Length: 271
Length: 309
Image (tube, rainbow over all chains, first blue to last red; front, side, top):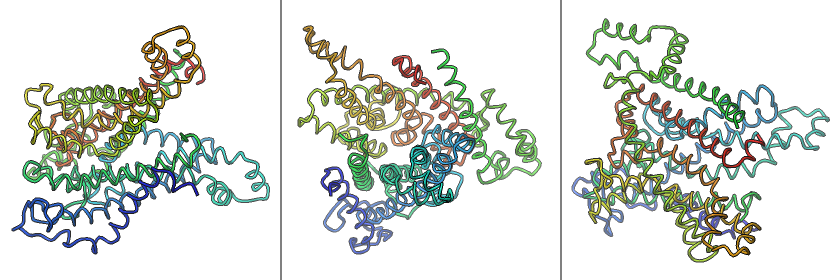
């Protein structure tokens, strides 16, 4: 098994695993509740009692960073999976049926990719009520186009193979051919796409929350913690710097994992 | 080349139409009555009705869409709910600052990225090469708004080398930190692209010939190797410039830089939908235009591309 030996996969996998463990066992890791207010302990610097210090209302920054992992991971996993499903369906329809269906669907893909990513996400998120649901809808609505492109080319290549022609000759339905015979052979690019975009989704959620469009107080999202912390950066830099560091390490972890998987699984990118 | 340019221009039309259509419907999906938002809470029903008639909000959706398309062709992007000024005028006022920031970020990215990539490619698999590549991965993974805060706190507040934020007199001192924050992600990409591009051409036979002819190593590297590796790098720089323009929202917010991105943040806070959508459309058009320019430049530099397509 050569997967774990790749240094990127090892380091990226370890960081991702740490994030999953942190998110899952958050209540056991933290000594404080993330929304526990203590006005007598406002803006306390890092200490043994509060490892990452406290924020503007005396909440423990460490606990909030730990609970924030749940939001980042949750948004990353759900939006990527939603984007994967949308991209999969559109890519398969486009590649398998070709013709007018393909032209129409590909123009939709072109238009989606023609928008600057963050701005399109903002203009969708701003329509809905503030909160994580709007982030989910906006990111899922935008982050599928790349998958559709990949799937289309995979399906187009696969459907010309002899084994697919043989299955069709036996009378298999289009649905059966796609789901049971084409998709299982196209899982590698899908897996690489899914993993590589996790970092982008997590970063986008933090960006939206930083702009005030994502998670709303008191939800402990890293982006909104950085936003509120930045207002007091001169007196209490720890309030924004620690959640930012957690975000950067998480993004680095998923980037490493994605690059490692691409190196190992995709022959075009082998060093 | 002319056929290629014409083909690319024709291909742009459906994309432009799609972008404008999506922006229109996003604007119409925004919650609340636009007349209410423009007239304010204290306005009478009569005043609201007047606004609806004036801006055509009382017309059927398809008519509104037609008018919107016509207005876009005339450069009219709508009226801001908040300031009641034309969105196009606000963009024209704010865009130069965003352009300045994006251009400076590009200079930072080119200087640092290409240098790092070149040195990395010239000394492959050495300590420096590995360090540059690890640093580039860290650079790609660092959120721009957090890096901005780090620079602001350490360089601006603690060391007091540069102003931590703001526009001041518009001098270069105010531009350095935001430009570094915005350009860093591309430093990483550019370093990796330059390294990969250079390594690909470094073993080509024409370099052996150049060396055999007795050319100096500097000439071999810059005139022969780099000139051939530069084409994909130009693409990255062009696309990055487009993303700096549209992606400056976060950087401008951190550094209170008075560009279009900072204005979008205010528009988001005030739910000024015409300004948000007008700006998004404007940036999308710029994005498409820069993509086109990069494609044409690419085809100009590498004739194989225009002949193949």
